[in-house]
Image (cartoon, rainbow, N blue to C red; front, side, top):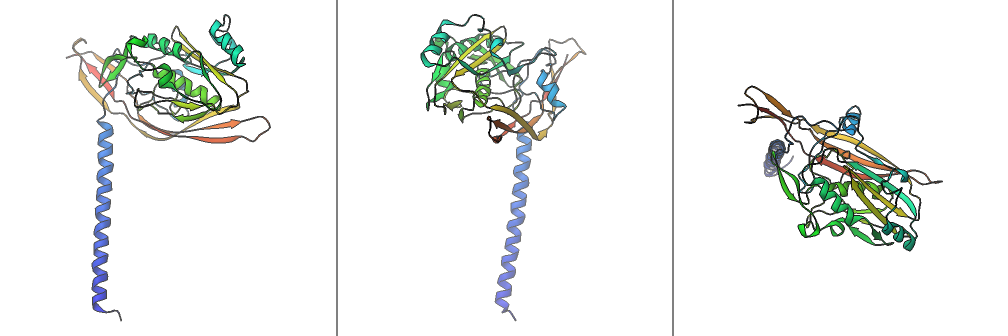
Length: 342
């Protein structure tokens, strides 16, 4: 029969263990509650001027797993709307590139010098409704990227290629969202270069070393396929893991950004896949707008928070397909805003 002192000690330890478990459960519930409250109190990023129209990829993908259209708080990234039926992004053929009919002299010289006449892959993103300074900044950034040569084994930093983002380098004020207002910051809008280039690097099967998603989904590429940059904080870096050089050319005109990669190799077939893991509905906020007539209302549509897992299937000729995980991205919500005339 166990000694009484042993039994008493055991009972005390069991009670103490029970108290620890109870305290742990309470702390876990507390942190979950704090996280939910914090996600609902994030800065409201909205675009004034009425209901934001949904881009084509959003309309298509909502029938698949309801991917939202959100906005980013990246200083160099802004949201744009899309005319109905217009495709906002996609891989393009060489004939579709705006410089195909009359190739720039500099590009021809680089191709001859490095033997990179073959188009490896090209990607475009559309800016159907650019805000102030946005399109101009993308044109400047594209001009810095055009003509970039990456030798075998070398690493590239997008910040070092198109930055620093200063007026001395030709950038001007572009749109940045602060709370529910649009403010201007130098180089606002150049994140679309990063997102477009990310799709190029993945399709060309180069090695991605650093990539950061936006905090909220952007409309010009689907969630999980975006990339953001911020000088001194976030970069997009990649490595030429091929045995031959590659050359990048870029151009932005009439709201459409094109980026192409030229080399001496044929890329694999790459298929993108996204799976929505979690969704949190956006809340509704009401606020007075003195510019509206009395009794009138205007809805600025927000979007749900979403968590998306992304992977690709890579297939080379005469080799089995390979599945590669690209990670799980978490995008925060942007509340719906209902404005009313006071």
